[in-house]
Structure formats: C-alpha cells, structure tokens
Length: 174
Image 1 (cartoon, one colour):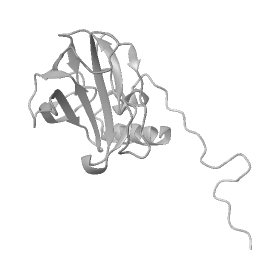
Image 2: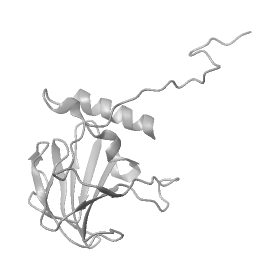
Image 3: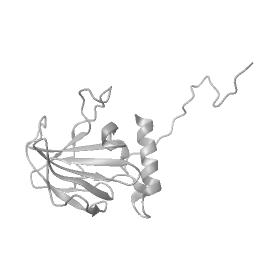
Image 4: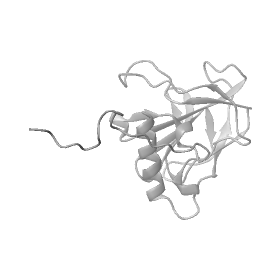
C-alpha cells in the first residue's frame, strides 16, 4: 500500500501546475491537526476498516481542499454532510462531517475553503473530528489510501522491489 501512495504522489506531481508543492497534498485543517485515529486499510477492500484518518478540530473550523480539483459531491450522503474532490490523475479526497461552502462541478485550488467542520463524527474522542479520506481509481472499485502518506511534508522513500538476494531483472538461467 505504501508503494501505491508513492505512485499516486508521482501522478499528482505530473498533473500539478507549477508551484503546487510538487502536486502533493496539503493539510485540510489549519493549524495542522492532531491525528485521533489513523488509517486502517481493509483487506479485502469491502470489509470493515477505517478508510481515512480522523483529525481533531473544532466545530465551525474551516476545512480546506488539500489539492486542486473539481468538487464531485457536496451534500449529505447516508445522513452525513460530505464534500468530495476529484483531483487530476485519478485521486479523490473526501471530507466529513463538513457543511459545504462549495457545489458539485466547482473547480477548487489547493487551500480553497470547502466548508466548515461540524460536531459529531462517530468514534471521535474529541468534540469535532474531520474524517479525511483518499481513494485512487473509479468509485466502483476504488483503492483507499492513507492521505497522510500523500502530504507534502511526508518524505517519499523508494525501496527496491527485488529482495537483497536477487538481482533486479535477472535473466532466467537455462
């Protein structure tokens, strides 16, 4: 999953305009918020898990777009207020519970105010938490990823695919 985050960061970088912090994500809350619950990817994708991170905030706090893109949803989904932004390259981020200040179809830049944080996110140990999610690919078969791994402040570390005892791309011996 960490390798997928590196590939997504590379795709965002390729699609980002100049000066967009190399296309990586920005924090959606300011100042930088404490993580109250981390990402817990379900395996397989349809089982229980935590498909994002929860960030401690306060009711009425402004929630910002973590990267430029197009708002694809702003309203209630399953009784929860949510904003979702589609970014170039196939990444989509979601923010809940957020009272939207944007509308579907609206183009946003990184740092655009999406709305305000509301109280009452289930499982939040403080009064208000932002559930921040990221997924790669079409909604019907999206791969959820840890948005923290895509932050501009998170270093990208590439690791070899081949093990230490195998030479990369070694030709098969007869």
